[in-house]
Image (cartoon, rainbow, N blue to C red; front, top):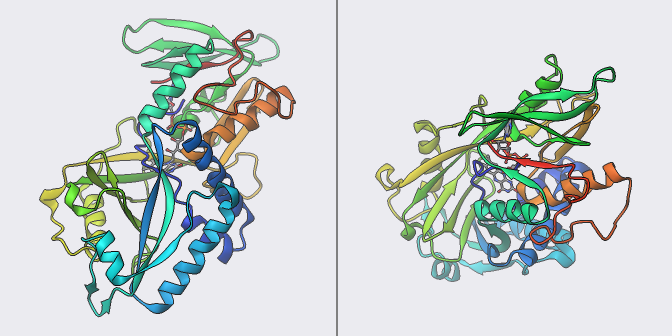
Length: 376
Ligand SMILES: Cc1cc2nc3c(=O)[nH]c(=O)nc-3n(C[C@H](O)[C@H](O)[C@H](O)COP(=O)(O)OP(=O)(O)OC[C@H]3O[C@@H](n4cnc5c(N)ncnc54)[C@H](O)[C@@H]3O)c2cc1C
């Protein structure tokens, strides 16, 4: 049920996760980076018209920082292995200002020593989403838009979930649909679907709001992003070229779950403030052409002993017979979720049905018609 409300532009910026993996000796984070880098390459190979490699510049204002980022980004290259897009490399301050003319050479008590440029991916998420829905329809899935699951249908006696009642939000009409397995991929809303199965279900989503703003094209050059993994007050900030403009972000703060999240003025100021230190152009509030907000579905495994653990990886669980919840994770790794689920449900390891290329093939089984795509 991938939505367009996440407004994702980057196909995995895993540098900070790699840093956490190394410093916290966190295997989970390392696995996330590894999987995401593999999927990033697969995305670009599968849909080169919608996804591409993007060089991203990391500015260094001290020699220690230069060595630190150079080593860190070489490790990022190493973890990517054969899925590497291009090797990262160091550029002098002079070369960097030619590549990124708006990058500040001097700041308060500091001057640019150089930059390390590495490659990440960028994709047009809404168009990839539409492609996936169209591919599913082509493979026989029933795809609905503006439709909402309002209740779950249970088998009498066993209580196993056997389908869902759907409301067409345009006409108001309601109807039942039946399936061998109902997959709850409601993102930040997946707890409300779980509550349809059991009104006492413990929440597993910890929503985090992410705001992006659009600035004029002159803020950044075409074809080069700017990423600061850690600003002086510990924030991650980026500026990416996007459809002839510059997108800057992001925030990561706890929020409540709503269908129409809105960016707040303090969040916009927060982003402007963070990029101001790195640019030689005047960063002004009036330059903000638009701003929007999305909700990251950070997930806790409801069966996990340690409820403190909130992961950026996905969580798949079948707490109620017939209802599988799949949530959390990254857009970049969505294909892997499907494969994990497919293997779990069919008990098969790789088969000829397995979705190698998600834009052209989907795992939706035409004969069993056991999935339904619903967007609301
Ligand atoms: C600001 C921001 C930046 C991000 N940046 C990145 C990034 O750089 N790289 C990356 O890989 N990922 C990124 N993500 C994460 C990524 O977008 C999400 O992990 C991904 O969208 C999750 O997909 P999903 O299908 O689980 O949920 P969603 O995409 O949220 O989709 C859930 C869908 O379920 C629908 N729904 C809810 N309730 C019902 C119901 N009762 N009936 C029917 N439908 C329902 C919703 O309307 C929605 O369409 C970012 C997210 C945000 C918010």
